[in-house]
Length: 123
Image (cartoon, rainbow, N blue to C red; front, top):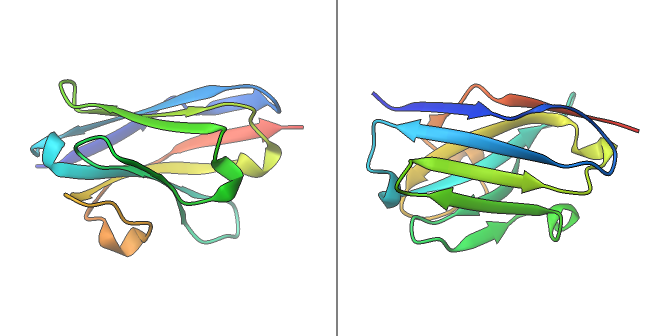
């Protein structure tokens, strides 16, 4: 049984940093692309970043480039998202998701999802 569990969210002031973590169990982790999505209140879920099993990375929004860093530790079945210079518009529930092999920016392409972790940025 595949389990995806996010952690690390919280309330932070604008300009601050957070590190989100995600553990994925029940599958061969290095054969899966894993990604972060986010959903702000009243908005659709959107792709933030994705990383291949081999480590290649993608950032789907220009607004996060240079501030967000995705990484993974295949030995620990862990996915991370370092978020720096947080802005109020980063406020959202952040989800971790996994799919076989290749990255995608579409949530419909991901089979496994966590419950999400809330990130709230105050101005």
